[in-house]
Length: 136
Image (cartoon, rainbow, N blue to C red):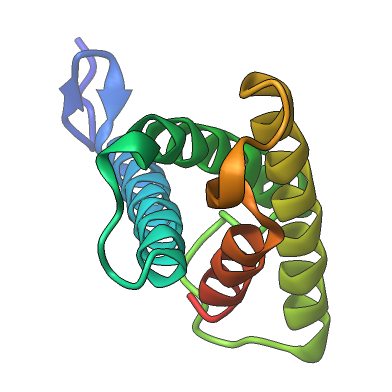
C-alpha cells in the first residue's frame, strides 16, 4: 500500500483546493467591485435615486459590465492574485483593460437596448463607472 502525504478530498489535493478557493475568492471580490461600481455610477447619474423606469437598464448594465470587465481583466492578466506589489506597468494594464471593458460595455448596452434610450445610458454613467472601477 502507499500513503498519501496530503489528504485528497473529492480528487483534489489540499494544495490544489486552496488555489481553487483563492481563485474563486478573487473572482467573487472582483464581481462585487464591478457590481458596486455600476450601481454607484447609476446612483451618481440619478442623484442617488434611480427611477423605477430605469431599473431594467440598471440590470442590463450590471450584467454587461460584469461580463465585459471579467473578460478584459482575464485577458489583461489582472485577476491572478491580490496586489501586494504594484508597478507602473500594472497600472497601465489596469487603465487599458478598464478603458477597453468600459467601451465594450457601453457598446453592448447600446446594442442590447436598441440604442441609448433617454439619459440613463449616457456617457456620464459609463465614465462614472470607469472612474469608480479605476480606483477599485
